[in-house]
Image (cartoon, rainbow, N blue to C red; front, side, top):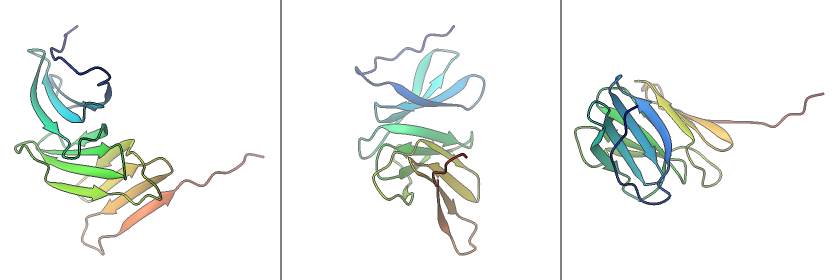
Length: 142
């Protein structure tokens, strides 16, 4: 077992991880940062801090240069380029109230954000640039 060397603040729990390669891992959490870990040496190699000091609930990566993070309030998502220190762009998923982004996934055309009561889909295909909000409707089983 590899021990990751870093002194976290009290209460700075990890909320999500993403494997880039068998040796490289991304993590995020209550400490408001995304961290890139190299398991061969057991150390954090790079840190991206949320510009608004919010807990980072979720993250996704294309395993190259792009990272998307889901934040703790307002359905906010941050787009990051690993080659830069500052975030590239902010997106907001449609939400009726201030919801964390519990999960995020993307491909070259779509961005999916799982919120407390909905799944938001942002379409970047250029065909109307539609943003949809898929609301979960409670139902009863008879």
